[in-house]
Length: 219
Image 1 (cartoon, helix red, strand yellow):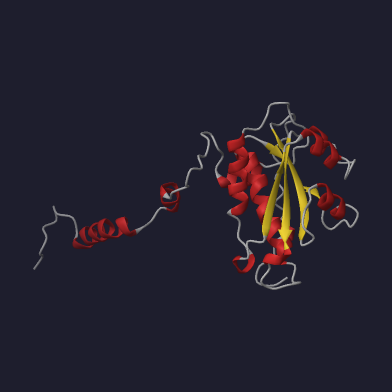
Image 2: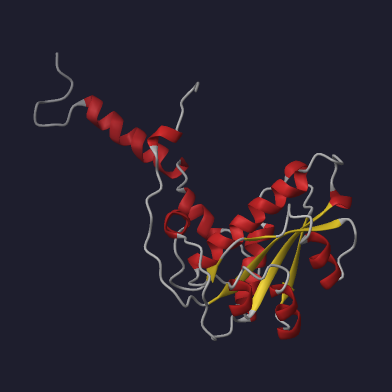
C-alpha cells in the first residue's frame, strides 16, 4: 500500500527539505558573523580590500607621495598590529609612531641605504618589550613583533597605503642607535621600522605559489 500518491513528492525529499530548514539557521556564515562583531570606535574605510585579496596583492612600497596619512589611518594600523596573535598572550609588542620631520631625518641616517625612510611622512617602529615576556630569553618578543608587523603591512595595503618592512633587528649597529634616538628603555628592542604613505609607485601582483615548497605529512 502506497502512502503517497505518485503526484506527491517522495517522503525522502520532504524529509530532506525539513532537515535543511531546521539546520540552516544553525550554520553560521563566518563572514557575516565577523561583520557583526563590534569594532569599538575603529571605522574600516569603504573600499578596503578583503583579507585574502590584500595578502595576495600586497607588495613592498618604497616610494610615497606628499599626501599626509590621516591620524585615524595610523590608529587603524596600530589596531591591526595589536590584533595579532601573541605567544602566551604576552602582548610584548610596543609601537612608536614617528611623524616629527626632525626625528624622521635622524631615523633615515640609521640605515642610509633605506631610501624609503627619507620619503615617508610617518613611520611605525615595532618593538619588543622583554619585560613583558612570560618566558624570559626565549625570543617570543621577536615572533610577536613579526606577526604584528605583518598585520600592519597587510592592513596598510588593504586601505590603499604603501608600506615596507625595514629591518633594525638583528643588526647590532642599528639597534642601539634607534634605542637612543627614540629614548627606548634598555629592555625594549626595536624590531623594524615600517614607513607608511600613499604609494608613489605601482607594482603588479606576483603569484609566488611554488608547489615544490609545499610538503604534506612528511618532507
